[in-house]
Length: 380
Ligand code: MRU
Picture 1 (cartoon, rainbow, N blue to C red):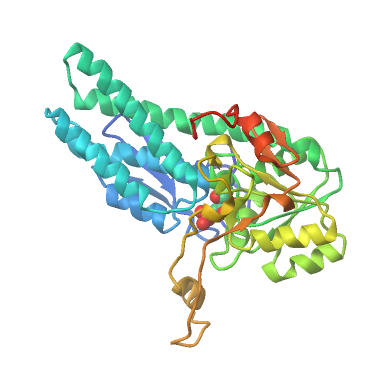
Picture 2: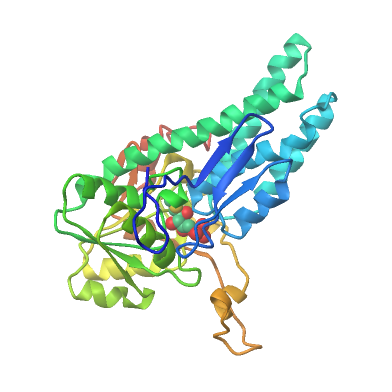
């Protein structure tokens, strides 16, 4: 568990990106990541406030692929709070469908969101079948089973992130400078992170590392969140503007790059925060190994290559009026894709909870996921 502080002075409070308090009618609590690093505030959602959870995901109050998945799973439980006493089975499942469809529209790129919603629907379907067999329908019972599924998704992510850290740690040499883009840390997952778990494990193993955190325009997840997390963990961190990565590499300060992922296609092409592709090209040019760290739930074998990954387009004001100050003249056209796709050929290895996939080929990815090419299944 991380210690807690605002703006750098380490304190003792525990932080958890997301937590659920109570039973089916309980409360989803989440850290509002848009306020960090200057304010630490926890939001609570209850009483069927599905719109609140949707807005929190859409506005990046909770963000990062695994955390979005966990938030969506709990979001389903929030959405079902309005039908806990429903006696009409069809009405209950209609509401479930509305809730899952709504949450699926909150953000398009991170496949963990859809993976988690799919798991929640399957859990509901199984419970429904059992109830149909006995002829007893209880909305509360289905909702309780679904909360258990959301909790399982959350718990599994904790274990997975620690396993990812262990898989990746041997790739980080003692004394290394390591560069990352965006935030793939505890805030973006259940508590430990993916890319940042690798750094945390290297640090815990006694390796002397320094993290170079790209500030990550336009929403500054690297400057605001990765730097904050590294401070909490006592890992030396240096924030650089995105445009400085080439120079820092040229100066020999970086021995490895590790980033997270939002969706990985069958051939290993990887969508991650906008700017990641440029970092991968730079790493390639400088002969620096570029790794992606991600759990099984981030792979999407239904997509043959990264060309098919949907790229979220966000509000131009994030570019023109970032954090409240206008920096672009009125009336200028702005393009604001939130993600880009790094071709598999630039990725030295994908660090997963099962080990490192390298070289990055469809065959090796399928072998790691236990989904040989002939398999009809695509997820899970
Ligand atoms: O738009 P964001 O902040 O949700 O983008 C997050 C990223 O790109 C992360 O690198 C990715 O989701 C992995 S988080 C473990």
